[in-house]
Image (tube, rainbow, N blue to C red; front, top):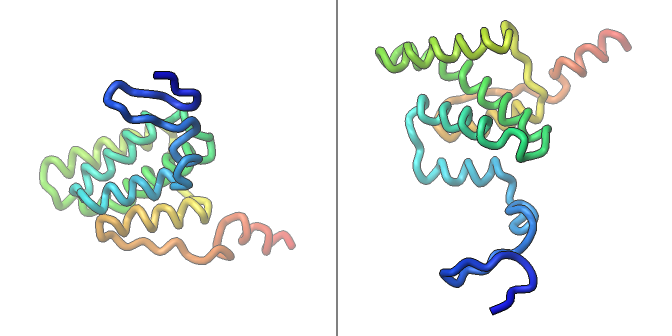
Length: 149
């Protein structure tokens, strides 16, 4: 059998060419969110999923998406930090790992672009953690422009 476009696999499935997003129009964040809705882990596992997504996708997805995944994973670490402290030894281990990650990347202050803050809000809501990204006019870029203008 000859398949002119896409791939053919022995079990009879044919796959179209192009990325999954091009084929379906689905944003990878939406796909992760939907998968998580179906199987919501604890916040430690959920944080690990985001860090894993970053390490596995870096270099394979556009840089702006890599930056967003990185920012959301850092943001989740900050949001979950207090709750980890209430989870006993495992939670304290997560706190130490997060502190080490911040130190390794020389992060002592963290500000998100507004669009990434909206993604963080969505990601946090999947594990029932509230986060308010503020309003677009509250972004550091806009505040700086108002002061200079």
